[in-house]
Image (cartoon, rainbow, N blue to C red; front, side):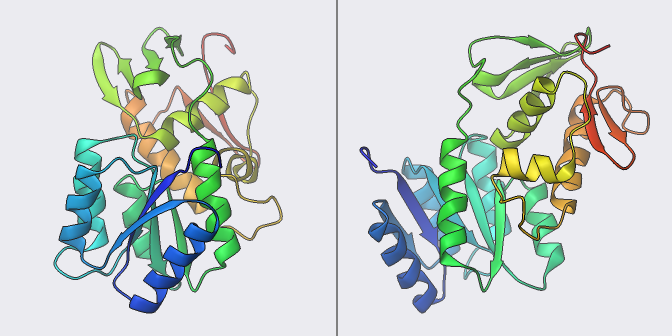
Length: 235
């Protein structure tokens, strides 16, 4: 990397913390670290990190609380949560609070580095300055991670906006969950990833952009195929 990206690791297990610091320093990152949730939140808010690796179980303030507080201040801050392998509820909670991704312990260090690299590449490069009309009711402003539904302002996370832009590029065609995991999340197509990750994000998006979540008009589920975005161009 010509300009070193910066990572903040918030992890209370010393061996894991030291291993992650060494790993990302080896790959050319600037790395800061701490072992306490409250201290991690303070550093995250005071610093300008390109990505935060956030453990769930932390002293003084757990990872969910840290993520929640960070999202109150910044929708753009990339956050990857580190969770216990068997704790599905941890994963759901983290994504619901706005984490960009999660990785289960024990994890492959190569996979973790690839996921961080993927998030850093997934800065919204296209259509940033353009306001996009999805329908007469819904407008998107990718540059500010915001939008407008029937005159009401909406805030999006980086991941949510990336999903919407990818669906829009499909021009009304259904996009499978595995394709979204590959193209938006950056997972290998051969990876055994639970597709509920996609469904959780879609449920969150529908709560934001649908006038009635029970009868969606923007994000449509196509049984056996995935999701499609109904925009004025595809109608």
